Length: 158
Image (cartoon, rainbow, N blue to C red; front, side, top):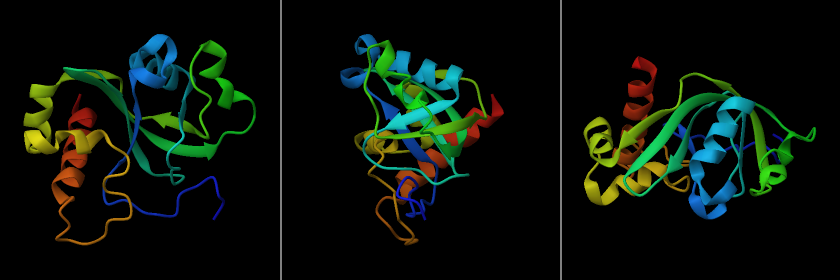
């Protein structure tokens, strides 16, 4: 397995979350729209598995913008500079994606209803470090994993 692909399987969709702090013009929605239009995702923290489903999320205070995609090949042909050339970050891991749904804006209140996750744990749905390599049926992260799956199902119905 290449160093550019993650070999840690997730039980639910992996998340690629953009935050205002590292995004073009300090707006995570800008990075998400670029991902959607250019069919590319990027991040520093962890890599993805080719062929897996991912949720691409722009986090805001009271809402998120999200769409789902399937991970394609690792990008090393210049497109990895997509965000950097527009004033954003230069991400370590960049992948071609095949969009599965359109971007949708969802309020935090709606997210609680869709995911069924406890309000105090809702942040885990957006954090990549939660639910990677988890394969235990009684894991304390099971609600997070299930919440991501429900969000993915919700998007597919839109």
